[in-house]
Length: 125
Image (cartoon, rainbow, N blue to C red; front, top):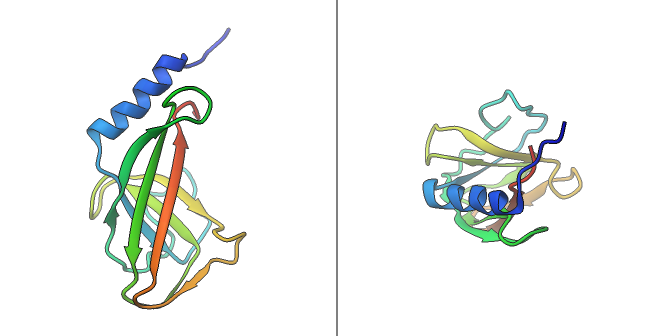
């Protein structure tokens, strides 16, 4: 039995996400979340910022969604995890990554600006 998403389907999935959802980036200082978790391990308390979403090419034309968000820190933190949510508060965590900077994290201070670029391949399932 063979199961796959055709190239045109990957582009359609990516465009559907871009058209339907606003995604918001949040940062934390924890790690170890799993697919059953619904939030960051240790949210830093910074206000979530809306990401700019675009379709980008990983393997086939427009098969991935790229989210870019810029966050200006209001306080010092060691940033080790990042997530995308479908709401500015609450909502569903739709992407999670920890181990930033090879597991060392990023020490940031008030007024530092962090820019995140996250690319999610539509065919990963």
